[in-house]
Image (cartoon, rainbow, N blue to C red; front, top):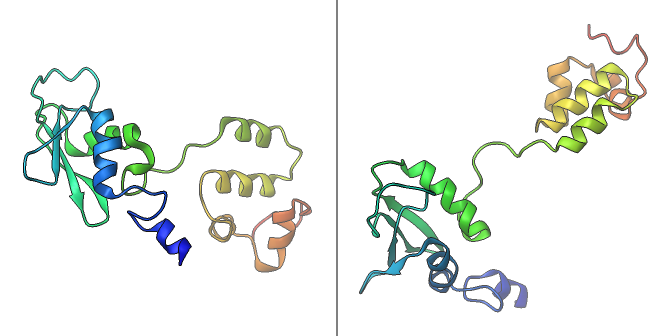
Length: 163
């Protein structure tokens, strides 16, 4: 019961969506609440935007969260504005980030310098790129009886050639 209250908006510890819009979104987006409505308006959040109107971005509370409703900026499309807003408000923004997660540079260097058999190295590179292990093994053409050896990095040269 307590865990459910913590997870619900307005529960203990988590802000109500309206409070989140007022506290987190307004300060970072320099927005003001529209009188008599559950929506806020502010300037375009894209840095160095040439438009000077202070009412180009519209966001509001609908359901259990805060959403960007529209952007009237003539210089930037709605998707670009959403990406900037997601960067500014962080975890308060709904949805998932666009595109795959960036590859960790240190992990890639470590992988390149490792003493792995070639097929295991290819598998690790596909996994680092975001592909699941079964999909990567299928893509490499590794037979089912050899998969555990390739995963553990102890496949012999004969087993590494797909048939």
